[in-house]
Image (tube, rainbow, N blue to C red; front, side, top):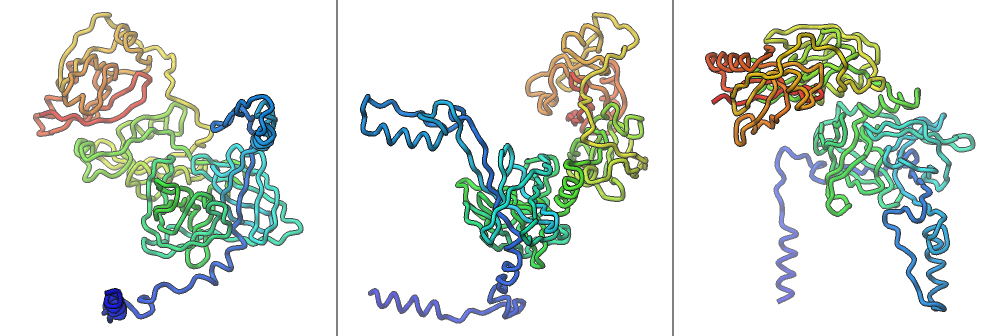
Length: 493
């Protein structure tokens, strides 16, 4: 019986398989060896080891010294064990050294600059760079950027010949292109893995500039900060994150694209910090309902939900309700596009901003500020609101909301900032159209369909006018108690 099974297996294994005509013989045999490519790059990829001194009693996973009976034969054993782990006898006082491992790569052999992830070296007291030939050099931290999770280190290259790699253009890579990762997974330095670009422009909610390359090249713990190469030996990404329930590679890894990383690295090298462009607007994604309410052909662009005081466009050149569709000659499809393009623009540069305002396309010129110099402008100022209002205000109900005028009494009741104007939402009925959109009591309706409202009657009149126009949704601009704005669409049926 076993021989028969074996014969069938062999027969099946040796059966002729037809190769589709569009597959070349070379492709049918798999990709060519990457041995020569890997050999030339291994010397530029380094292991990053860090150490941090932590008080023995403060570690999150610290195990206390067990209480032993007087004269126990295990006393010496436990004394030595806990002394080694916690830096003091029995873990009392003293400190212990916590170590971590990651990866990095040399980008300048003459000056000794090394790139890695910020989370690899965060809070480290000592940083050491380990090279493929076994040599080690102490490293100093040049600068970090938490928004992109990038750090630049510097080692003294005197007496050691370093090998460097250069950044390539990640914008040219395509889904399906071969890529190679080299790093230090689980402390196993000089590990090479190969895969393809699985997807591009991934947003994994790790930061404001998410634009990750997804790859199935095996990336594990310890690969963080290591390079992702194209088949020309250029760095097209910095390996940063994985999705894995087990902690090991399941074929879903993410790399910071070089198009984003290279600019950050250059700024950290030159200034020790980032210097990003700043437009000074709060933006919001455009849903299909908002696009319809604004008369847009499609849900593309970035909706301006607020203007930051003292910012570059606080002069009225850009207004809440505007939809930015192009910035400095580059198309803006969504809020991520605008955030990234503005951040990558030089501080002080004058740019053309193309926007849709009340159904018409306009172009305004803006001089960019610096993001790092921006302050929290959400705080309300102390300006006078002008005309005094009565304490008792009329109310009205529409779309499941009970509305009242914004006067001193309602401003005090809900803690609404002095510079907010409009109509106060006093109550929201459960299961109403307004409740479905997350509208809450205390918010202020400032505009409906891009027209300002100042009384409950204004709101009702605008809603009725929209219904007569055949509109199904009403676009509301809402102000939070602190003044921050957002747009929502509410069904009117």
